[in-house]
Length: 617
Image (cartoon, rainbow, N blue to C red; front, side):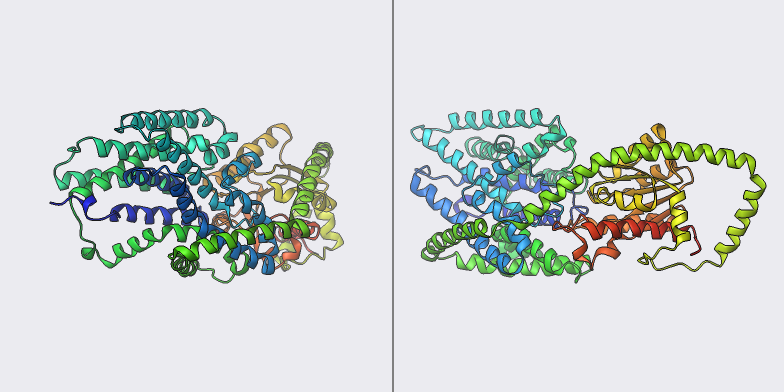
């Protein structure tokens, strides 16, 4: 049987693997709650790059001419896509332009991943960020690796065999693994690991190492096709499962797991290569689904470049049009295919490629000059928002102390009143019950509070746990509810809710009502909400849902709604429904409420409390 490498350059199984990686990273970008570990597909791309670069190496592949040709082939479509996208953004979506311009030159000059490390740009928390080039840090990293690869080949150009190169790749892989372990001890270093040259080089280097080993040593691990298929099946299973269960937000996802996953992908790539090399598979025998995967894998570079660009424009202009998730994914994918195919065709010609490379680079420089001239309005507004949030955090501490003293005073008064007027209280409660039976609920956005409603709000006490969204609404809530105690913090998630609420209970004591404003940062687990209800000990708990541009918004809101529907003491405050058509109530990040939005946020909670407690106007 003829060996595959004498017949063709492309390996179909590795092309299919590239397609799977593209789908994984795309679903992660758009629907991270469905595929939280999709970010791991970057390891597949990097390892394939190292493996195939080494397997396809030719003599004098270290020359500057070949490196420049490689640089042009990779960067020309990127310059083109960035130029087209930024012109459209400048004309029709200024927020996208302002958010994305900071990445244009770093991507063009291949240091975007380094910029993000110094900027502390968290890949897993892009709420309110419309940077359409979020995914192109990978291109910068890849070109850095290509530069290292060419340098190694240049230094070893006179070497007659691959033994020294094998040692170099082995040492670099081990050093890179050591860097992952070193930085994998603190949650603060997730961004450092994710974008780092040193931490990420392990995938590329291991790919090159395995390619050299497979080329220089006999491969008789599996002589039977069935044995090969079993090994490949196990490796594919080990590759896919983490896509569904491993979250990049947790430091435990790095360290030893990151290393193990890289090794698994390395073994899978090698096994697929050797399997196709031994057992020739004719492409004409593949079914239509496999041919589709081959097509996607073959064009995956161009599809990848367009994917996040399309997603952000789609979110910006059409977020509320396609409510069905499947239709949303399908429409975006069709647009990506069309744009990717057009770009692929455009850059098939060498002369046109060079012309576009030069012309679009000039356009990118001009766009940066325009940005300097017109300024970044959103940057200034977001800076003011952050300043306001920080200021409110400090003021909330003082307000909480006052609320704590008021709560203690009220508690003493209630004990004294209860001792004096038990019978009178019982009669009053009966009267209130009769009135509640006749109660007509007001509209959720009816903020014309009567004197009686204001009196009720002024006499209740609330304990609240929240993220940054509720911080600016604190003063608006306290106008009506002086006995309001808030423990709010930027970046907090639902998983933090039980511990924070328990701390309030232990150190301050809980109010009559509990308000939970979490979920903007990723989760709404039933187990966490159950714990919150247990800590509340029979009190009414009001869960405020979330509104932002992240892919998990609908999932989080649905989980909160389902939980509140099933629990009598859990009540939904539908912030999303209130704010979705009121862009003028939000800051430029489309996540945090501005002044009128904060006022509406506060009053929405109050109206819900009044309706649940059937307070007569």
